[in-house]
Length: 76
Image 1 (cartoon, rainbow, N blue to C red):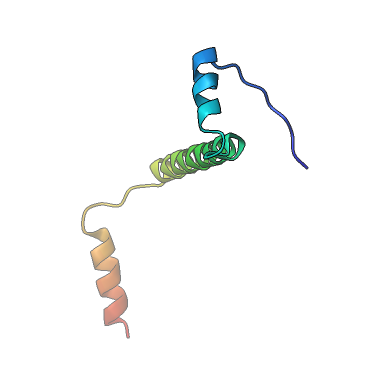
Image 2: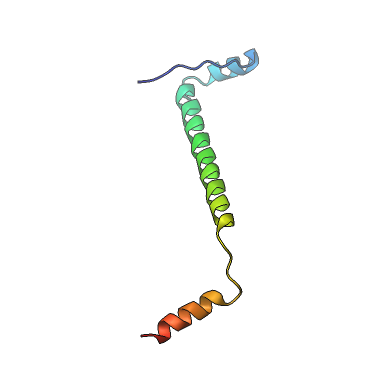
């Protein structure tokens, strides 16, 4: 099901759009723009959430990970 939204644009812009109505489906163009913008905003929000989660993780001293990996390799 589709919903309707309405926007106001300058008359000059509407007149220019009318000149290209046979070449451009303005509804589809605007719909595609909105979908892309929402995807971009969702990605930014998710990235921010991940960065916040990562910032709350405890940090390891320099070389700690290497020593853990080395220890694991040597145990086999």
